[in-house]
Length: 594
Image (cartoon, rainbow, N blue to C red; front, side, top):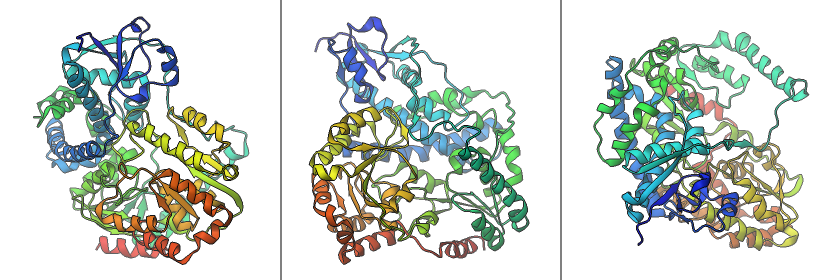
């Protein structure tokens, strides 16, 4: 191999003066259509994909799960020492969780790609391009994920930080290209004079009045609950029956900062090379709420720290005050109960998010399943409220098939099975193409493709793929509502919508790659039922042929006894729905606070 310098790039933006160099892109996701056109006369290369391999994906997932447990202890002890407080490391785990969730995976991905480049070309032959960008410290999610996984310029600069700590030469450059951010597909900015805006204002005012006049007199000090998907009446029942209160939606806090010597975090001892890089980056990337803003948040959280039990779904990602309240209360003996908030839990062979939530909880509410593959929380199966509201609600009024898709950043933001790693996109798109080309032309006329509600840069490619096959692309309405009306639901990935369709009793065909989306051992029997009933396929051609064969009598096919039996058995395990769901929740929570 000729020992010429290889110029690495994480993103599609390049300095103009280097187009005659040996350029190596870190992933296929960086090589956009405009980049291909600009470099059509240049001999560039792309590093081999990493995460389109089941073995490597599993090894990476297992490593990150173990690393998370080790780092929470080490960083937790370091934070207690730094703030001169006598707290166990576990006090810091919930406040740290959302940061580590979105910090470790992109960092590990960049490290793994740079290590592969070193193996292929030699460290001395590499120079990495990095956009000039000033980092943090960050306040938290979603600012953190936007900078590390979405906006090209800051992603490039982040990779430069990693490369420096790996001894790779970094060449900085500036770019005046506008930052690419995630773009909402649905939604336009609301006109303040529009009826929809006024309706939103009215509903918000009604909710606040309900909380003040109706809910407040019943609230007690037993349980502090996430507002979750509960409506006003349901919150009133919980308040009365459980002596529960609800965490208010926090407005912007007036947070005070104090001077903290972030370099003290470098005293943490690493276990391996990657952990050493994590520690070296802590002074730059550790969020302010763990350091400069800790005392301010902790003082605000004290007023919410005297409950016996804390129930939360998404608050641990978005509400720092709540996180510190839970941590303070657990020092006094309170319990933390988290809850499943989507598909994949209890199903995926490895689930990084699930492992974190089960690790920091005393109890974890599932949608029906129970297993022991992750340490930590006791699993408490309960019927899911939103699923319970759409139970058997399917009544076809629209003679169309909705094809549900998904999207994700072009750079790794968490370790997740197919199709959520950027390296899997070529496979994902090839499945879409095989499916649509196999559909009969008269069936295609009734198919409406529903993209994900955010565009991370893939939508144009989706449109180009589907436009020649007469497939309409439309994002409108909420999916649970649409599922109740459409003739057929098609999903090309394992998702919450699959559970919703089965519960609503909407005729459904699912298809996805099995090798990269394997079920855990305990979940396999339930998925085998869907495969045997020809609801779930792992070959897109077989899935399309099934749609072709049933299109003239979808409802008759769906209501066949064996298919309905498979659906109901699957629901018992993974999407429990019950019209009396609230009574079951009240009974379970009364037991927990005894």
